[in-house]
Image (cartoon, rainbow, N blue to C red; front, side):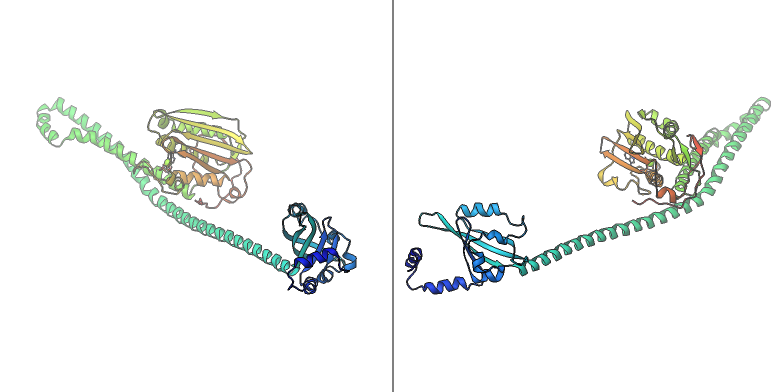
Length: 459
Ligand SMILES: Nc1ncnc2c1ncn2[C@@H]1O[C@H](COP(=O)(O)OP(=O)(O)O)[C@@H](O)[C@H]1O
Ligand SMILES: [Mg+2]
């Protein structure tokens, strides 16, 4: 006697469809087919199910598909039940476990089976073994991830290579500029020395000659007035009065020029590290004070100066060089101010570093110039006012002390240079040579000076 339900189904089917064929198609399907009742109890499994899971039909019937449940967390069961109970089809993957404990992957499509009233009576699961596909997918994913990783590494290496290359180029450039500067400094030093010395002698001689001339004239006027009168037109014609006066100016101007050349040579020497000096323990606030005293003449007519110094520990450094850094930055600040300016000089301690900032409310630095200001010979100033070595010297000295210079600048509003000098600096300071000139006004306590090599800034 045929089950009534089955009879109903058969009645619903097209009379041309052979129900036995239909059952065979399900039973022998290459996909796993599982039917459960609405409570999730297995009521049917096909042959493929047994092949896949290792459970015989009789072992499976009456069980919950949970018997296959492998590791948790990979399938969202809540979402699955929410979808199914809402009467919709759910698709997803299961990481299931065979009877013998082996794991396998299944891709499932589960649909609720509804009665005439739309009530869920069963669930039909059609599942496909995707273990191999998963393996391939995983391998593919891994190799894609590896390729991405490799590409990123290569990109990074490429960027590093480029940076190293440009650093090397920069170093080479700096080294040749340094050599050139040293050579020029050396060549100019000698002639400018005797030019200045000769000018000073000339000044003395002219003064003596003028004195002698004046004495001769007054004697002549007294004792031979006729002769004096006779010579008067000649004196006028030769413009002797103007000549004597102008001689003084010419010599003074030439001495001034020679002094400027001497300063440039000094800068070039510092830049190329020709000088030698010793490292010392120094109070940087004192260095700042003496720097301010040195440049006070330049500051006083153009700007007010505000100082705010915190107490600082003695710093192992080359104070002469640091004085030069402060001088250069202060002079730049003054030069950036037209009038009624304000310069703030501060010092403080931060994270085991001495911090010094010099702030001005001058012209500011244009964006396109900001990167260039540490380049030797970069200047925006007119000929005679700047040669563009100041900041490159600062950079080099601060770098040698293991520190850095930070710039904050706004066009038309001003610039702040902040120097960070780590109290315990490594690397650069231990390898490079310590040098500088000896006209610093700040106190230092002599320490064992160490020889350092030539260093050029990387920009
Ligand atoms: N405080 C500042 N305000 C505005 N510009 C500055 C300041 N300091 C440096 N600069 C810019 O950096 C350039 C380079 O400075 P520096 O190396 O000292 O050379 P120089 O002073 O001889 O021009 C200057 O020409 C100027 O354009
Ligand atoms: Mg300068």
